Length: 337
Image (cartoon, rainbow, N blue to C red; front, side, top):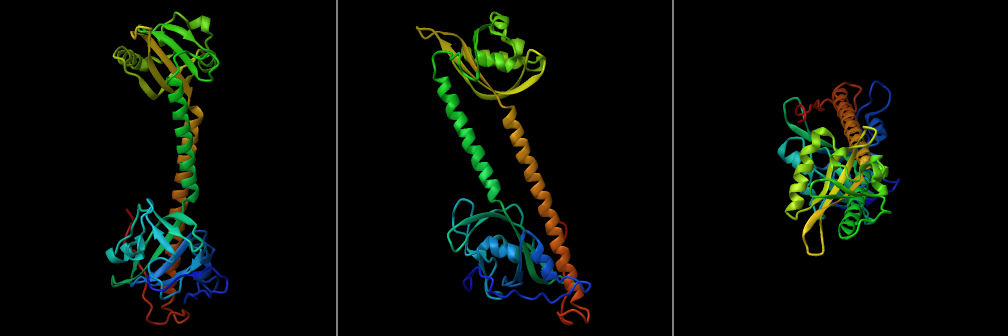
């Protein structure tokens, strides 16, 4: 990378884009107003423009016409491996003459903080098909990474709790989880208060009844397979499935089943631990919805930025445009995959 980015400072002058749109706001002002980090380069990769959002993401202001490919202080791959600027997604887009999608990277600021982001570099061509530069939009995904880490931490915590429960030799009546013991024929032998809360049956209603009382008809094969595994001395770990409550409603659960042995080591039944995962499923659905919304907004911002630059290049050819008669119209390489 040629040149060293300067630390962010309001004193750094911004480049004036050579276009005025319909006598109103300049193209520069429109791009500056966008919340996404956007910058452009010439065909050799030298940075020609960047907005305030880009400077904020980088934590510095690169020198226009000198810094190349990306204005960040340093770059890394998601796994922490250093990423040379001339191998970054923007550089690939210029070298290959195509839009680069589906990649992630991490920018390191001069103060040492790191920002994970998704780049959307797209090369720009003139009317004759000559490469004249590229535009890139960087989407900060710090919040998404935090959410993923939080979910991962919660999942690991649940797994540790379930493993500890599996090691217990006795059925703990006070457990918040539904804990059920059954014999090898699937007949319920014990039913704790957690099971009462989860399924709605009191212990006296179900003890001595087949466990299929809480299994929907379309999932009865699961019980047959579970009993077969128990007889072989195998367990079932965190099976996500559906069970039926007393009122007929269904509940999503995570099911762990372990063999129960007598003092001689003979398998005499099974212990089931069922945990309601309804809220976890809802949280996952909310996260998926947020990610889809983020993707939709990214596409809208990218389309707006591309339209602004295209209109700017066209206007530059008019006598009023500051770009002079030599400016070429910008066209995109085609529909994105």
